[in-house]
Structures are given as C-alpha cells and as structure tokens.
Length: 127
Length: 84
Image (tube, rainbow over all chains, first blue to last red; front, side):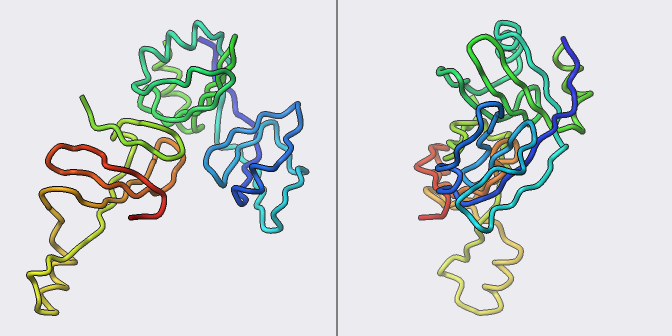
C-alpha cells in the first residue's frame, strides 16, 4: 500500500446557494463536505463566490492517497460498513477502518483522505 | 445489526459515527419549579415511544441533525437539520 501524503487544500465555508452556483476550475477537486462547506484541492483561494461573507482558509489537516479502483474497493469492502455510492465520480465520507475518511471515487481510481493525525493508524490498517 | 442513522448530507451511516445529544425534557407531571429544574439538570429522558433527539455526525459532515426515533423498535421515523 502506498503511503499517505499531506494534502494541500483550501476549506471554503459559504452559503449553500453560493456553493451550488460556483464554477470550479477544471484542474481542481472540490469536495462538498456539507451543504455550506467545500474542501478544495489543490489550494484555490482565488475562486469567486456569490457570497460576500465566504470564508477561505488554508487547510493542511488532511493526508491523502490515490489507489487503483480494484485495490481500493477490496480494502473498503473489508473496512467500510456503509454502502458506497454506485455512480462515478462520487464523493462519500464516513468511518473507514475506524477513522473518519473522505473518499473521491472515480471509475479507475479512488482518492482516500484522512485527518493527518490518524495517518499512521490508517496506514497500519490498510495493510 | 447496528442502528443506522440517515444523515441528510452523507446518507445512511452506522450509529458509531455519531455523537448523541439529548434534548432534555421534563415530564408534565412534575409541576414544582425547583423539581423541574432538578429533573432538567440531572435526569435523562427515557420515554417509551417516539422521541426527538439530536445527533452529531462526527465521522462525516460534522453537523448536528435532528432525529425522531421510536425507542421501542429503534425505528428512525425521520431526520432533518432543524427539528420537528
């Protein structure tokens, strides 16, 4: 299993309507954590939103790893109690191997994001 | 078979992902003001039937949700962000 690396990101908090209407650049990944919160990677503090009170904060509290789809699904089948979304691409979050994980599922690969303090535990449980 | 809670943002997730937040209620049978304060501060709810609870999705969206649950069957009657 490959090692997890620190994930450079920007956390954006804004009104749900502003985030719904946002045009995310093609080269970034915008993960909708909640209706009023998005985690954007790589960092993108220059994004314009229709919310004058939007908050943009650099976030270095996560680590990530890309896995091949078959490898990731085999691991998730073992360590994930909840049902993964069927469509691709898709974002999902929940407990994986006892740790709060965020998943970005593409057809051929999967991005797994975990809080940085739990990287060592997560790597241990991946093997 | 554990209880699964339908988070309005993340979908159905096992109860282990959530933190319970009780909405303290005092039975109508307690009328004395001091007794009501003591009950609110020290006594937990234990109704038989439907009750409204708050749950915090620690492992997912990190938001509080309101859930209506039947304590006899553990059936989740519904969830929402605000309340009932």
